[in-house]
Amino acid sequence: MRTATAPFTLRRARTLDAALKILREEPGTVPIAGCTDVYVALEFGGTPGTRYLDLTRLSALKRITTSGEKLVIGALATYTELQKSRFVRARLPMLVEAARLVGGVQIQNMGTVGGNLANGSPAGDTLPVFAVADAQVVLAGLDGERRVPFNAFYTGYRASVRRPDELIVAVEVPPLIGKQWFRKVGTRAAQAISKVVFAGVRGLETRLALGSVAPTVVRLPATEKVLNGGGGIEDALSALAGEITPIDDLRSTAEYRRTVAASLVRQFWSETA
Amino acid sequence: MKFTLNGTPRELEAHPLKRLLDVLREDCGLTGTKEGCGEGECGACTVLVDGEPVVSCLMPCAQAEGCDVTTIEGLSGDHALQRAMMREVGAQCGICTPGVILAARGLVEGARKPTLERVREALAGNLCRCTGYEAIHRAVLSAHAEVHENATPSATVVANENNA
Image (tube, rainbow over all chains, first blue to last red; front, side, top):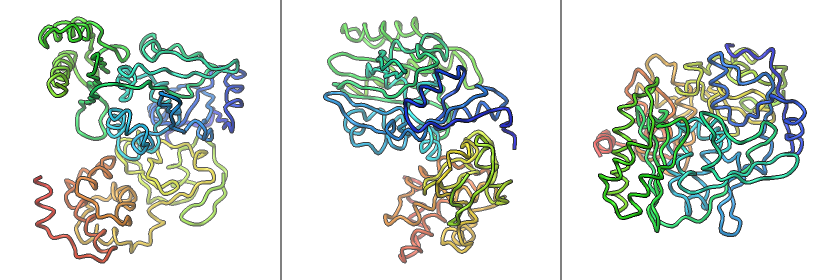
């Protein structure tokens, strides 16, 4: 057994209130669900925390439903559940595509939407989708709920406005008009973490987002402005070059990411024409 | 913790954060479940929890509390897919094999005949460094045919699908 468990504790909450109380009373507690990020960190000697709180019994947070015009995705919905949901399939097919490309079936059965958001990796596969969908993140605390626009959720590399005593309980997605397009580029077709991940919507207005080209997932306002203003794709790609900041890391190089990001925007623009 | 292991109720003491993989191998003595990468990439440690494939290296055992866990030992040794893996030489070194069999079991037992594409998707999370996958895919299709008492899919059909 390589994962060191002895100094760590795990609590399991049966209700959201109980979970929020634990987070408030025991600062530093790390909420866990699918564990597909936390257990990888532990395996490699990282210590995300010493106190853990298992959320998987909060079955109400698994629900995917609609409320008025909005699609409401519970934070504990797994990638498999996203693919099966008739609401997600009808309203947000690019999220189905993103979920289908996360790891293999096993990871899709475990990993959750809330975990993808909370982990906050710039390579998170669902994040560009929520960025172009102008989604809202629903945060719950003991004092009540608040909604934060997804595009204002991250403040830096793996940093967000979520307070330590809050939980992500849902993501709300307003109706989306236009063609949806998602593409992930990794080392191989399955089981690879993204080198670059892209989502776009082309409707009354064009919206674009990229992952793995900056410390957080990013919308591309300058590129969008060119395209929405009737500019050509070459001008748009010049704008793109000025608003992404990819780096060299273990998965790819800055140069490769720049090339792929431009290719993806170009491909999106021609395929959604 | 209490759970059902291969159809038998079990109760044991384990740290709640201990990986399900380690509980199965160390506390239950079932070493059919293999550890490959330890980070959810390779699928060697795949088991079924409430019928669904998961990687046991990333699951705290507490999450299996009250669940129905199936490991390779839970299959008879004479399951159609196990026999097909032998027949088609779908295993060489064998490290990935228990995980492959559990990940594909649902497809083999399902009523609908899986396409090659569907088999590939179901096994996308199981890495095999020996076979090049073709023999594994043949075994899954062949086992499905056997379970559902159809003809064994001919080599031609498989070859054509591969080229599609």
